[in-house]
Amino acid sequence: MADLFAELSHRLVAGVDEVGRGPLAGDVVAAAVILGERVPLGIADSKKLSPLRREALSKEIKEQALAWSIGRASVQEIDALNILEAALLAMKRAVEGLAVKPELVLVDGNRLPRWTYEARPIIGGDALEPAIGAASILAKVQRDGELTMLDEKYPEYGFAKHKGYPTREHLQALATHGVLDVHRRSFGPVKRLLKAD
Image (cartoon, rainbow, N blue to C red; front, side, top):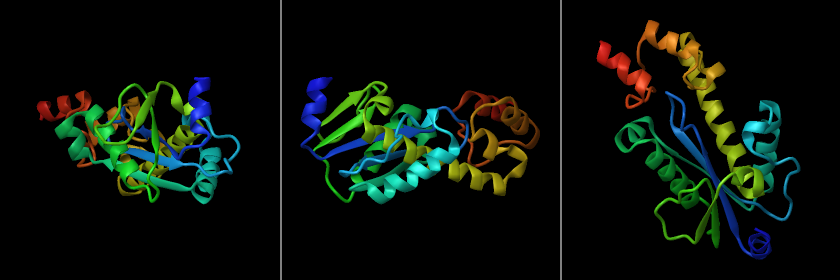
């Protein structure tokens, strides 16, 4: 790992991460970030940060990064492809959206999208590599914001609270109010409800 960090110090490196594999609703969202010389303090795995801290860091990252981009795969693409392929597609779109072309892409996890970039997967990369941590923060803030907006449209489902994950509250709302267009029909709990109808 020390060799890797020595190599990164003089290359344009993009970090990529995605959020939203587990929820029953909403797009899977990815971010790609090329950090500049100033790296905001406190970058870490987005799941370990409070919502307020994530929001503040997201703003700093966007202001200080050399380049950043958001990519996504829609609910329809998730159902057509499967969630893993959709997550890889979202990451590919995020990197392709960067205004600066990276020389190396570091991807959180153990799988790489199909692309022409030189890239390396890093398991637990959001905690090890600041550019991946920054990407995890941007992706999480973006997706959480979208689910909060969905909550305004469909308040009876509680999206602002559970962000689409299969909590007891969400499953109860699904059973009571039915399946929405924003729900992933290929996911077990949603698929079972549709079959029951």
